[in-house]
Image 1: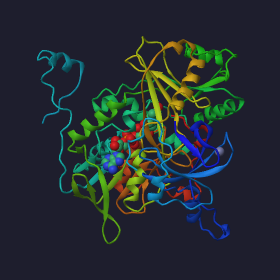
Image 2: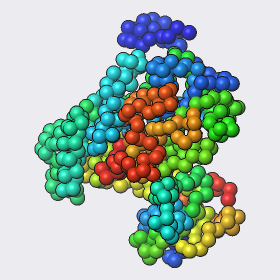
Image 3: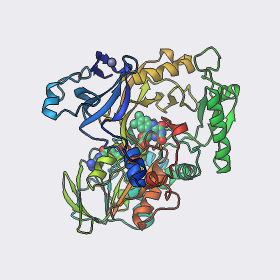
Image 4: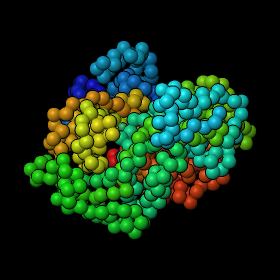
Length: 111
Length: 419
Ligand SMILES: Cc1cc2nc3c(=O)[nH]c(=O)nc-3n(C[C@H](O)[C@H](O)[C@H](O)COP(=O)(O)OP(=O)(O)OC[C@H]3O[C@@H](n4cnc5c(N)ncnc54)[C@H](O)[C@@H]3O)c2cc1C
Ligand SMILES: [Zn+2]
C-alpha cells in the first residue's frame, strides 16, 4: 500500500484515496472545433509512462480534494505532491521533496 | 535434429535409459542479421503467432524476441481461466474461436497443455447481476456459445463448497455457467508453442530486449534495435502485454492503453476439493484448484498504473475476504505465494489485434486481465494479419481506429476486472 502525502492533510494510507489517472489533461476549450482524432486523443490516449508520471489523486475519504503527484512507475516511489493548478515540479526539485516511499522500498531507487 | 515426440509409450521407453536421453525441447538460438518477420514478446500470444506464421503461412525465417525468459510475463502469472461467454458478437466470435482451438491444442502441438473444460461459473449477487447475466446467456445462445442460468441450489450442486446461505454480505442469487470453459496449464502453453515453432525453424531468442524500431524513408519498418544488436526485418508483430505502449512509442505510435498491476495467489496444496472454476466480478474473487492441489486465486487490479510487477497487499486481502464468505471451508487454509503481472487495459476492455499506421508494424495487445483464454485464437488471427497484411474477418473489428470512429466493443460493463 502506498503512503500518500495529501498537500492539505499530510501522509495517509492509500486506502483513503481514489486514483484520478494522468494529470494536466485540459478539456478542449472549443469542443465543436475538434475532429474525431482529436477527441480520441483527449478521451482515450494516455502516455502510460514508464518512469516519472504526473497523476491525479483524490483524498476521497479525507478532505475530498484533488491534487497531483509525481510517481516513478518503475518503483512506485513518489517524487512530489502538489496542488491542482500548480505547475509540474521539475525533476531535481521533485527529488528534493522525496515524500513517501512505500514501506520496504526506501533506498531501492536513488532519487 | 529429429523431433522427439511425446506419448505414454515414449515415457516408458525413455525410462529404460533413466530419462537421460530426452533432448532439449527447443534450440537456444542466436539472432541472425535478418528475418522475414520478428515477433516481439515471448508470451503465449507471441509464440503462438510465430507457430501459426510458420505452420499456416509458410514463414519460417522468423524469430521471437523475448527480453526475459519465455512465458515469464503474464502467460506464466495468470489464473488460467478460459471461457468465451462474452456479450458482443465480435467478442463471442474471437473468444469462441480460441476455445475451439484449445479443445485440440494438446494433440496439435503434441504437448499436454492440460486443457480442462471443467466449467466456469460466474456468480450473481445483485438484481443487476441477474439481469446482466441473463442477457449474456441469451446473447451467447444467439451466437452459438454455451451459457446457462443456474438458480442458487443448482450452483451449489455444481460446486458443493459454495455457500448459498442468505446471511452473508452479498448472498449468491444465481449463476451463469459455461460448461465448455475451464483452465489450462499456463507454462505448457508457452513451451508447447515454442517447441512446435522451433521444430518448424523459428528462432526463439531469450534475453533479447527490443530497444528501438528503425523505419525507412517511407516510414516503413526496416529493423529492430535490441540488447543483442540490430536485426533487419520488414515485419514486426508486437505482443508485449503491459509493455505494448512502450514498444509502440519506439515507432511513434500512440495506443489507448494503460498498464496496471494485477495479482494472484495460491494456497498450500490440498486434496481435490474444488471441481470447477468460480468467478465473482461483483465481489472480486476468482478461484479454481490446480492439479498440484493448490487453490489458485485471482485478485483485482491496483488503482494506479505501474510497471513494478507487484501490487498492494490490501488488494489480495479484499479478495480473500470474499473467498472466505463464499467458501467458509477455506478459512483456515494458508496462502503460500502471491505475485503480480502488468496488464495492458484498453478503454473498452477489448483487445487490439491490428495493422498500425506504420507499414510493417502489427499489434496484438490490450488483453488486460483476460487474455490467456484467447491465446490460441488471438495468435492464429494475428499471424494471419501479419502474413497477409490484412486482418482475418474475426479480428477485423479490433482496430486502433475504433476509438476514433466510435465503434467500441464495450465489454467493460460486465468484465471490468473479469478474467
Ligand atoms: C494475475 C493475473 C491473472 C490473470 N488471470 C487470467 C485468467 O484467469 N484468464 C485469462 O484469460 N487471462 C488472465 N490474465 C491475463 C493474461 O495473463 C494475459 O492477457 C495473457 O497472458 C497475455 O499474454 P501475452 O503473451 O500477450 O503476454 P505476456 O505473457 O506478458 O508476454 C509478453 C512478453 O513480452 C515481453 N517483452 C516486453 N517488453 C519487451 C521488449 N522490449 N523486448 C522483448 N520482449 C519484451 C515480456 O517479457 C513478456 O514475456 C491474468 C493476468 C494476470 C497478471
Ligand atoms: Zn486531504
